[in-house]
Image (cartoon, rainbow, N blue to C red):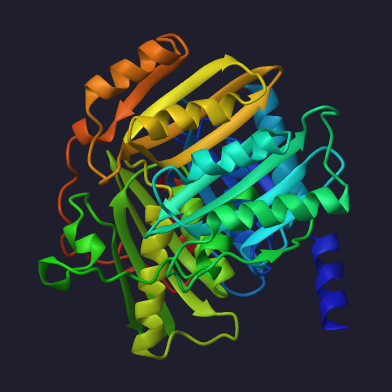
Length: 447
């Protein structure tokens, strides 16, 4: 009865969305007011992320039964959102308040839908793994339509959409699906690895693909740091020269919250990755503020568990820190960014990844897409030791594939290093000293 009553209240009070290009000099302001429910912050952030908009500032409040959010957003060129069709689409999406049900399944799944077959993979990362997967799919006459591949902390995960090579539709034959599962599981199965690949069926793709990747890697416990021999047993991250995210989790006893503060190099979808992890770990954000300063992002959230209690143990605090660090690191643009744009053909992805493997390139992350007969793929690559790629190797690969087909978009090894983390104060400052909600409205409207 309580659940039905909550649904009735939401139907009587649909979300109210205001998109304003005059309230801020250098950003479009999106304000969302709605009846509060668990996961609504993620729903809103996901819509903004799906539109590839950059969030430069945000204020969040969801105490009580009402949710209020303000986002300052720009496009990737740093401009306000002027296109009326885009603004209308954002407003419709937010006011419809879509809900994306979480799905925590096993590590390898093959799911047929009407248009394509969804394959979920996870296993031990190793040089050439993506090439082996693509070779198997090509041999099985599967065409990759879209895919996203993440690697983190010796683990790899992927969500791949494939069609039948001859019909261009989803693969539905149970025997063929079983063969695909078995062969991919064999490829993913690492030797002497306690986390072996498992084969399961997952539900149709109702969950956002990025969120699903977070869920797969979280279920695989990629946030657990791996100790390796040598150099006094130092952890991988201690030997990594990349700037690390700085995450702290402390108590706010007087207000009965747990305060999570993060500082990291700014990048697209950073806020989504953080909110996604908090939501799937069953935490509720009651207040929050996000600020981007040049290349750095600062985020602070006042949270409780869904049962209404703050974090009560040091072990839970440490686990949350590890999980948030992993969420930040999974999508980090490690290595050299290469963009492939050419006419699609059977076996293209298998050939490209084979060339990378033969030239000792390790793919750390990849985004694969095919539309209107065109393949547009992005790869983030290092050498097999995780170090920057020799430019001469890239030049050789480009001559082999085609200079106009494969382009170097970015080389992270040439980017200036972010400043080292320092102790920072709470971004909210004296926010909670303001007793009335009117004070909060004034803070938000003039920031």
